Length: 215
Image 1 (tube, rainbow, N blue to C red):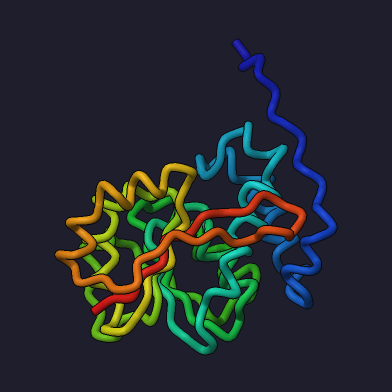
Image 2 (image 1 turned 90 degrees about the horizontal axis):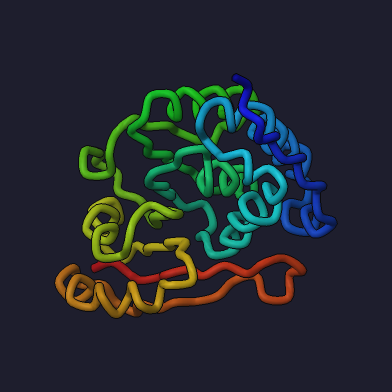
């Protein structure tokens, strides 16, 4: 019997997209179109996400782009559909990205999108964060909707160089997560740990970010 639940229509691109992506707008439009066409089929996003694909996912990730260091190297943990790693790689072509994802079909998607979009600043690694062995540590580490801070911090800290930074996208409960992870923060030697809100006044939903310096 056919599934009676129709997939939602794809959200119209908000005007603020051009402001956030500038001359990279056509590339992110292509990525968003690919995600809308194939994301549900590949299990990357659910059908309920299509009506808010731009505001809830694409632009929400783009808000983090100004926090990335010029000409740096960023490890994105649990890249999945490419949120935030692929979006940030489009928005910041001056930054090198390592997208870390353990699931094969998601890795295949990330590799295909990297090639289709002509992104020369992206490397895709199939592995769990704790399995990554790389002599060149990253300047910053990102993640979105991966796990609570208590579980996530021990996984991402080893990927950053001393003096590097965690830039982790979190939800509305991030303050409670940070309070619960206070011992972990101290044990890992994180400095200047803070919760910040980015995107206020950008005509779209703002997002919360946990940011801290490593070592």
